Length: 123
Image 1: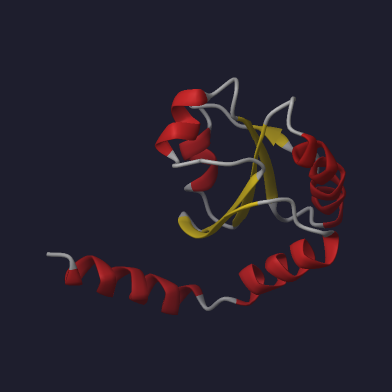
Image 2 (image 1 turned 90 degrees about the horizontal axis):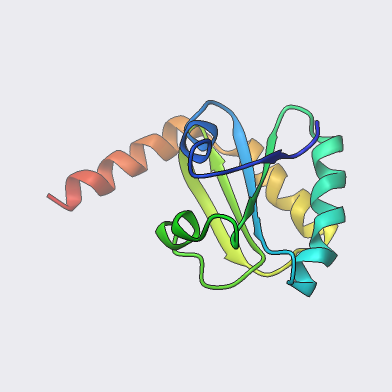
């Protein structure tokens, strides 16, 4: 599956859906972003059941700010609408593959229970 462009209008609906969503926050002038792009794109072709989204931080500065993006590239992972991972820096392919495997292996019922418990603890 090809990567999809994410904007402030499409981001929320994309990441809040079912399944796994990987988001690459990037900019055209960013060297590490350009090095990571082919790895991200190849992984999107190998994992057709996952949504791979690209968010141009220059084109969407408000969204990038709302997400707390401080460095690019930043990779974000969501599953079933829950943010699981956010880290700045380009990943090598084996690390990206491992991250995808970890996201697939999660027991989402357990994750939802942990999120609910954290939410109750804040009240």
